[in-house]
Length: 428
Ligand code: ADP
Image (cartoon, rainbow, N blue to C red; front, side, top):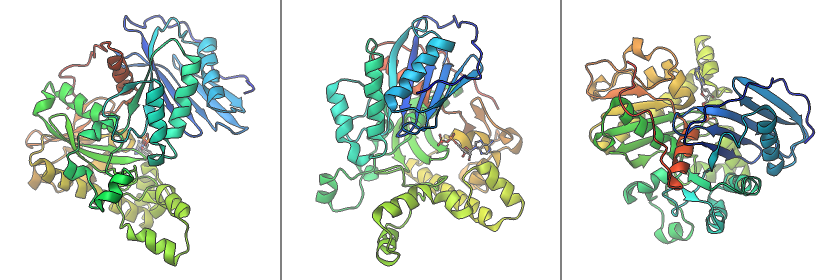
């Protein structure tokens, strides 16, 4: 790409990388590449960046280090060009990657199918397996693969580790992972419930236990990951036993632009009676639905503003979203039998006190309630938002998928991330 002057200044050299080095975490999408250099021990992002519009003439690269963001614009030909530009920026504005002692590169991969229940060190066999799983995630796995391939070429001297979004949910019991579909058809086409956002659900449920100073094995948890994509999980003793996403990330909760659960016969109906192609329906369900399809907005700040102005569409969108969320809370209570902690995380879960309050309003009879004062505002630390008298704790715990990937990458190469956040650091 052509480099045009950036707005960032060269920050002073960063020296405190710690004894364990750092991990470069890469999340490669079809037209974007996100990266973060993470200290797996302290947990902080040393530097981060985003390359957007890969393959277009008006690509944008934003690299952030020491509070300064440096931008480059121009054509980013492909994923190799994207990563090369990012590495150039590490060289130009820092941090120096040699000084940062990168011990591993961690790659987020969306679909690990039934094969991967753990992270894996990248080799040719692993790359083949990810490619073979592409029919299950045609938009994601090929883009993830491209990122891994260019990163291996550009950073050949460090191990590369893949961390799968589906891995945490490989523990689902058959009753939860199986669709009531003809068995032979399902087996032939690998159709089952896989679950997604697993890295976040695993990280958050683990963090809950550490923040409370409790043993993970002793806790029955529900985690609500409410971002643009949204999913719920039921976790018993650290083991996932239910989750709301299925074969793909379309099933389950109402999301920013996705339907979540919908009668599959709607597909037949739209195809037969509205003349829509399968691709058109796919786009409609994934990109033109959810709260955006109902209200025109998928940002909850806008939805609340519109509701405040009396907008009926925004009101209905919020009502449908909350209704589905509450159904899942109730269902997962029944799955678990006893609930110790209900946790909100991700963009909406961490920042939107109103949505949190609506999600659990009137559930006192089930032992779930929120203290309005504790619930107020955005949360950047693990925080208890339930009143002292309830049997179930309600918490907000910020997710950190990059840190989770960095720590899993370190563990996969046999290192110890020496997590330094063990025990008792909880607000509320
Ligand atoms: P993604 O699924 O893209 O990773 P995030 O977890 O970053 O999404 O969540 C993004 C969403 O979080 C936004 O679309 C918006 O609805 C919501 N959000 C972010 N900040 C706030 C806020 N202060 N109040 C309400 N909602 C917020």
